Length: 590
Image (cartoon, rainbow, N blue to C red; front, side, top):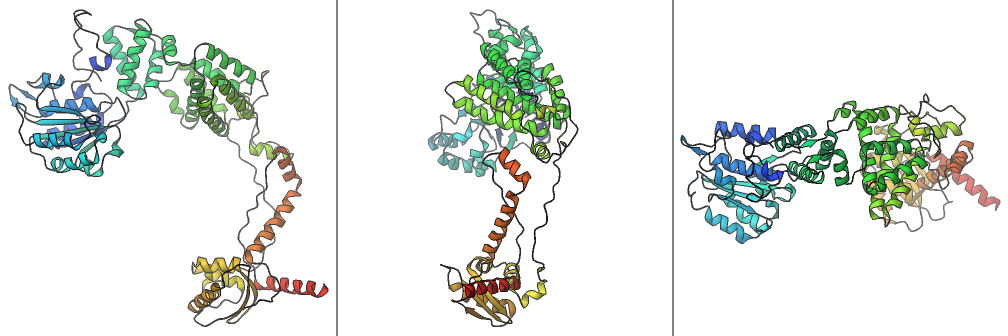
């Protein structure tokens, strides 16, 4: 945010106390506001055409210029010079009311902090004062900062005045929590979302400030400040102010690292490479050196997360390496690692570091927790991917062409399979032997009107989307026999007998004729459809456990289990008939 004219130097330190950069270089016009081009263009067109709204709401993260924009708008509404009064965004020279507005002492521009004036009584004062016109300026402007802090009663009391204010009144609201502002307020305002300032624009802004202050700097130091400022102009200016003081009038990378508690970015990349190569001894030594140099263990883990994210972004979007906020090491070495590491390895690294960050934060000894996170990550880097493991167990060559690891093997561990990856590998496609399945095909829709088998009866309930009947047919009823318009079934234990009456009513509705449903109490035991599926699943599971490849996988991963997923089958009534005959023969033999 560059002012139109640089402030005049103070006569003496005693006569004029030091003014921080965020206040000293606060914008006085839209021409000096940075990073908000869309909003400025909209307002410029509105002022040019005379379509000036009576209420505005400005939202965005801290330090992007919400309050500053509100004050510039108040100046734009009330611009007046020797040629007369006219709302404008082009301040060629200072107007009659500008100085008082800038210094916050104009009687017609009221700025209120909603955080300390939250009640209906505070808003009632505004409602009463809008009845009277401005004293000297063209418009009466009310600026309410952090408007989301107002109470519900205060918001409700403001609604009518906000919707139909006098022609000489303008409202400007600012908030960081736009979701807490009632929709009834938002619908009465012109809304502007102020964006975070991009790194390249922010870097240019800080360079300009340092030039005006006559202070030397190192580009790497500015890159660290811009990254830590997260797009907030005020945060960046405050960090720059602190860095100037910390470096005794010079902004250097070493002083900024010490000020922010950052580790050396090059050393962080060395640590990342050691972890990806499985060299845990080198990784722990790097961690200890960073810690002794003043870096916080949690910050080191956060830096590793940032670099993992950077490498992943460069792998997906190579143009991400051109970011001006990156150091030369991050650009060059990040691009090299993005070519050599696979997406699976990067995703796994991110998950371990992301979880480890919370562990370090909660641990009593942060250094020990950070070391354990690195040990876990280094050993995970040596783990084979699932397709590599299957290929080894099956005595097949590992799919994909082996690549050279980015870092040589060291004494801390073996070369990482993740580091050897250059491209994501495709798992081999294994086709399981087809399981025996009934040969009955689902009946055509027109056959549902006259089901001849129990399977068709279940399919009819599914076609009609009757979940209650379908579940009962599959889980609560044991089929005995089915013929034209007749059905004999047995109930499972603790089943609701009322399902018989429901099924009879549904069949009459679906088939157009009355069905005779007989409830058998002495019928031989026949499994339900659900029990049949479970038996088949269990048979497949037992068969899978006997497979040598599956046994090898279970031995490799203790505690692993085999889960069988089969397509739901429809069993014909003939299969149930065979079961009934088999059960009857067994009873006779007994």
